[in-house]
Length: 422
Ligand SMILES: [Zn+2]
Ligand SMILES: [Zn+2]
Image (cartoon, helix red, strand yellow):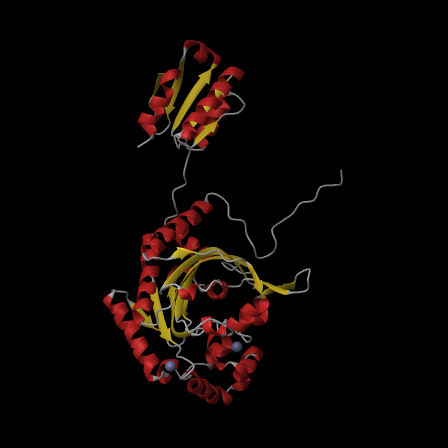
């Protein structure tokens, strides 16, 4: 045999292990429940897509497309990209499967890994997980308000408080050109103060300067024109409508005209949920409208809106604010001797069939088995040895309250049913 080799996970990715995984599972199960209440159905799209799906929709001059995509040729020479976000694949599926022929709105959610080649730093990963939703086919502000309300209900059901809902409207193809040129006017005399990326953005996509993270760009853009001052009549009405629905649904919110989001496909409403608990990585969830994307992918005009929640940040926040319960075995079968161990295995199978989590001792002294039962925080321990087998009884112990006793082996099924099955 060749010599052994140790491996570590790649830079910027992480394993999610117990007990943290229980936090992740809780988020997913609460999300599924809340999404179902609002009529969102699950969709599973592939992790790989054609590269142009993302370059077209997210935008050629965005950070994601310029710097962060995992793009590679497959064996047939096609350019493939690991999805950096979840919306474009869902929109692609929506058009490909003619879901626009179904009565609107069509509402979907997804959950899974996304990939961006970012500089690894605290709380940022190259493979990261998102739970997201997309709702297609309704243009009115009620849908925007309802989607934001659903996000709030979800985060509150998970136990989060002190959340800030920031909203903005970035206009439409009618009103954005005038905003764009007014931004260019503003930055034309300040070009020397911008980072090299922003100098390029100035030409092709000046809105992107507003979400550059370089310190001197943040400084330079102070006093830049606000997008909300340039909205056309329809966009202004829509935005006013969204704000009034948020008031109706009692969602405290802040209008943040600097929030443009890092993707080109957004139109009108954009929103973010932030918290003070995460330091500089403040946003837990973000989303917006993308009324033109279905058309851009070859479908009919279909207004749409969605959001995505960052699982790493959300679980970090939940951990900080109380964590989650880690499940433990309901029964531990400790056994001594071959015959007793086999009897214990059979009993364990019967208890599992009743829906209980049952651990068995496998091997080692009774002492070491009991130590393991205790470490797992097992509820009941049964102790069965060859002596017990011949007397037809075994010992039980409730590790939670310290009570103990004996039970006839033939009565064991009834015993666990009455004590452990509600
Ligand atoms: Zn407009
Ligand atoms: Zn910059």
